[in-house]
Image (cartoon, rainbow, N blue to C red):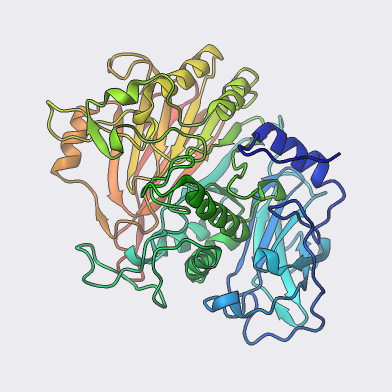
Length: 537
């Protein structure tokens, strides 16, 4: 059967054709290109590298009860054009063991790192036991990668006493060091949800270019990125960071993207600069391919030109269902010209969407048969209503967040209520600060019932050292009584979930402008099962 990809990607057909047709019979040595053909190329025999070919580290991701993805990218000179690699295919050995010394090997094989994917390797490891640690390594001849730790998920429906996971994202290179990732790595989480902004697409910043301190300067003279080579180089700069490599090697990641992996505040096929649609889609295609090449994700996420099916679901025992959402690819353009705006009537249009019709239906249909104790929406932009204007007589709402599509938000919350979801939890990033709050049945009535909670994680580095609170945040908290926490230091969040309660620990660093920042817990909030109310620990 010949399948023709439509101009506008049908995500249901994508999922079906990708998993059931194109990938049947394909091993780790065969992948599908953006145009549907098979990659080709002769294997480079007995390769000799000018430097460590695993300079960008290793990673695992998209865990399942029987396995996970393990990733690396062959790049002996990652900041050079082509990463110091010839246009040849390289055979890579991989090994997964039940112990950190790899004495108990449980899976092993060979993968091909091909130039069509920038010599990235994605191995989908299966036939493993649920809810246990595994360790992995890649080798080419005598060259060995660092050791990585991964963990399988508990079997769906199996009783789970506790899950510990981290949430992190927003890591602008020039704004600070990735020290938070070093501390996150020491947590040895079951998994980490990354909410996006893995890279930033802007031109290089140097000291004096802005008021905010430039903590470190990207190597070379990079301008704003547009082409596949541009995006590949930017990922190489970021992934060369040792602290980021430690984090990836410590636990499997559930990856998503936000705006800066493509273009600031992009929406569907519309760029911030309003370049012609066909040109922006070329840029989006390059960005999506580079994202796929550098992320530990499954082959189901291989982009088809400017389209990619990123949203997906993870069932974790009987404890929680984790929905990873895409709030960029299918959304409406920002209302009223974007940014924080008062009294934006355009935002109230019922046709406005954050998820698109198919993704929204996929999500709300799943509410009806939800089997986990907690239903989680892992996404990118703030969902709860926030009045950002310190003037009590003015309501300023962020048009890039769900406040730019409040009718779509209400549809989602109503669907959750009608499905009688006992515990709706939303995990968010984007705004470079810690927030925690409650979803109200009616955000115009602070006495209305809470129907869910949201934990927004701060940035790893974006925004520099930041601050704990100031006069503005004090005023904003007073105007938003459903918000229980604000903090604008850098860090990550730690979540400890049991059948009885959800605890969120907001981890912060005293500084990221220099190395060696100290980490502490700024606050811990708890939601008891069935109550959708946040209380301090």
